[in-house]
Image 1 (tube, rainbow, N blue to C red):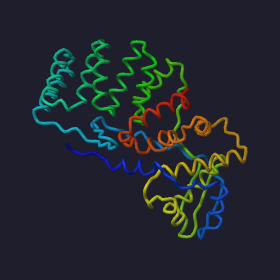
Image 2 (image 1 turned 180 degrees about the vertical axis):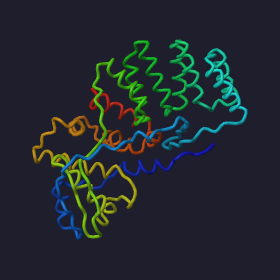
Image 3 (image 1 turned 90 degrees about the horizontal axis):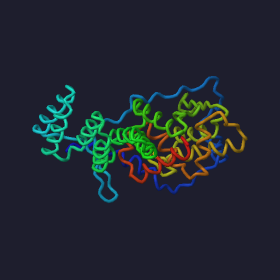
Image 4 (image 1 turned 90 degrees about the vertical axis):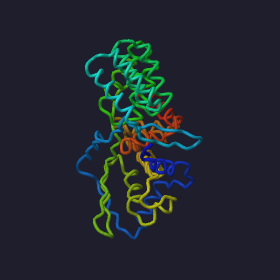
Length: 334
């Protein structure tokens, strides 16, 4: 078995369970003022464009094994015999010979029952044959063997939707999107199912209005909009202040969710102190609601981390994915 990018586990886990003190906005401002570096604060004269994450996708080639608290992700590896049978099944499928395709796909599993993605393919064939009952059975089999199979969750949601099991459809399409955050085609199914469920489909990517650049070894430019002052000031410390990340227990160059947590706390405090109106800013309105709903960490994972590193979803415990799902359903897209 070929091991996949297991290193992502350490990137995520490192950020959880932190005990360092979160600094207030006043403390952050004082550190910027007292720094040996010169932080040049200025207001932006034009909006910062949204980052395009459409090329950051999770392929459908991985499965994971969970033992106690350890989550290991692997890429599928086929024997020559299994590959030949899969090719035969695919040829039947391409020829629209679905009965023979079904038998051929099932014969692949007789050779290697560990190729869980084939369970999803079998479900697809049943779906095409409009046998939604069997399609649902096989998609659920695929998920039980490999929870991170985003296609199985996606297609299961579609079949639940067709059979008027809307609540289950909403749950499954939400999990699918968590597992492959930037997939545009998946998002179309997400929107359709959410509209049927009379849910909000307003979408956005986290896009703080700031530009922080190093002008020289002694000077840092911190540009920001009025709404993002607190976030930009804290982020400048994390990016450029010598020894700051280490003082927070984070090795230089390593990612920790603590960084985003402190920046967002600073942002919320600054918004409150300045009585800034955010009625027209969806991401800040949702951020504000995460405090009351205790879904602050889920906001960080779904809005900030997963768009940049979608493969991290494959390393998240199922309980964490469920928590993110609840954040989406109860806060983000009611």
